[in-house]
Length: 146
Image (spheres, rainbow, N blue to C red):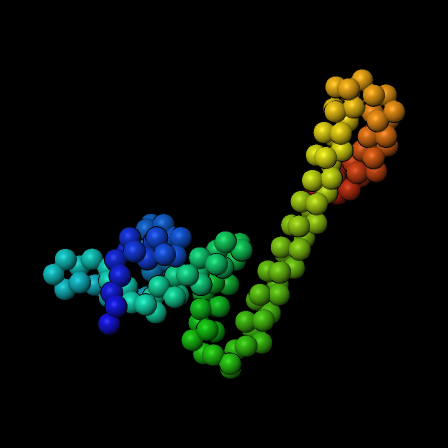
């Protein structure tokens, strides 16, 4: 049986050692076996797999409760496939909203840069065009603050 240290799992999963300990404390990971003499954690390849799944979920902004449900459902397999799908789709919708907001922010930044570029080049026509574009973006930008 393969055994990994907390440092190994941290490096391979991308989760910090304190996060791994926390995830064990709150029941997301483990229980993790301990070395009989040193009492250091000894992770199995299955524990590493679970840590990597948690790292992916965390990177996508999935909260602890949904992580807990997702992990429990993984252990149940096909029986909970619908719930797994729903969890992932709910978070996909949240990410879509974030992307839409970021697109507006990106549009704003590019138009503002174009405005300042026009001023830097002393190009009145380009500055006027940038102002027109900015007027169309500002209402969308204000919406992202609500």
